[in-house]
Image (cartoon, rainbow, N blue to C red; front, side, top):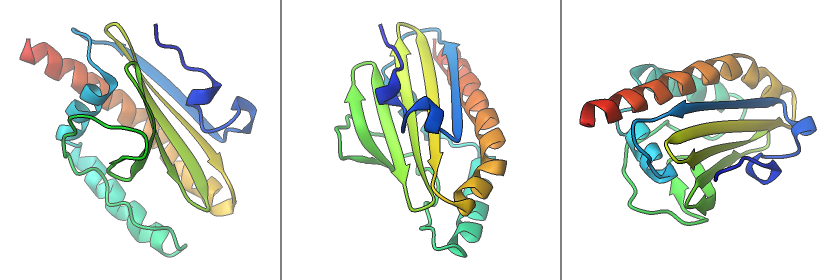
Length: 161
């Protein structure tokens, strides 16, 4: 059984500037990496635009460009590998833990499976004013994006039979 514990968050709950966890029942069990591959295979068009805007604004503050999601599939991953701009910091049969860190904020996104349930949990620690300002629009948008991604994943698995 998959559980999300403090090791699956970027820091202690009380230190988080952002926390979101969303789950969905899927029509069949998938591994965390399979879920990642399926969700990233066709990134939402709005995400491409959002990453372009993010990169343009963030560059003014010395933040590296991340470019968004490539849609590239991965057969397997291990700690230290990269999934687009994320570093794989944990790879278990029931969980994939991905991080992105810079001088403004640290992010961890975890994909956890438990049978046919998939949970995506994101946590953020901010380090400065830019990190806090960045999360003002990103936090609410992230919740919506994850919700849409989970629904699209469920729909695509249902259509595939």
